[in-house]
Length: 138
Image 1 (tube, rainbow, N blue to C red):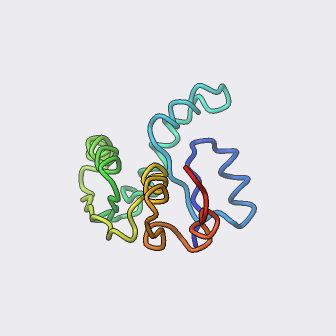
Image 2 (cartoon, rainbow, N blue to C red; image 1 turned 60 degrees about the horizontal axis):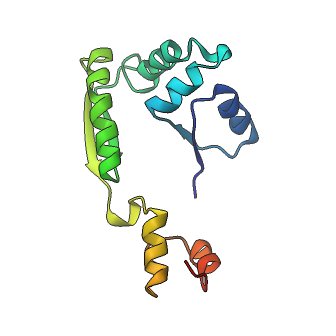
Image 3 (tube, rainbow, N blue to C red; image 1 turned 180 degrees about the vertical axis):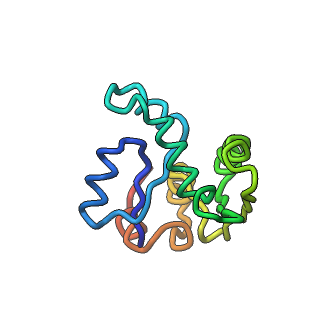
């Protein structure tokens, strides 16, 4: 299992990275904007765009970046970023793959509905989560 943190708080990212438990970082524009309101992070948007260019390929000589789409929400998110990516790195192609159902995100609402109707959780959540939810009523 890999551990990703969904944040734009640079201090939080550094702390988790130092722990050795962090495999990566995800974030979204609203988290970046929220963090940019904190005086310490006012330059966060410029910094994140600069670092994104480096990490996502423009400064690394990459020809393409491959991204995965798990849900319609991911699609909407990637669509909104596509224009910015094109402005930052016009010569880098962005390729999107749809995730296999086993890799797709599953909402907690859906999990509760499956439990409510006595369904099998084994294909939706990892075994420890299924065990922890066994017998729960929602």
